[in-house]
Picture (cartoon, rainbow, N blue to C red):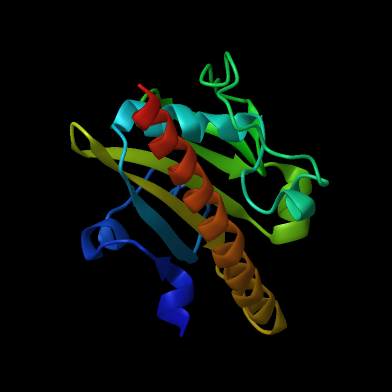
Length: 177
């Protein structure tokens, strides 16, 4: 059960790989991997991942106050900057076209505990890519550990929806090109 919460869709190599952001938190951590194959070229998938600067692309009624996440690309959303707040993260590293990583900003960490994350897009071939998110949570002890496991379970539900929504938009966009 815990393995299913820690890893959804990631290959053995993706789960084993270290991603930027894993060193943002001191001490022991929990690593959560979520990944999906996208039938769209990596640049198209990347552009849709950058839309996370605009909206969460998960359950809009819950995490976007009922506002619908845009179904078209927002001009300039791919102009990510170090220090920019994106969802619960403040961006620390950006490799345009490939990945971005961030650490939870203070208000987010008060709510969820210390956390960091990376979103990455890897080409499989010229027409397909992998979209991956690695979330890193500070490992807690005692009753707080149960809270961390609950957060990981909730994250799986929300992140699965987010990645599948981004996949759908990227694939639709690729078909229209």
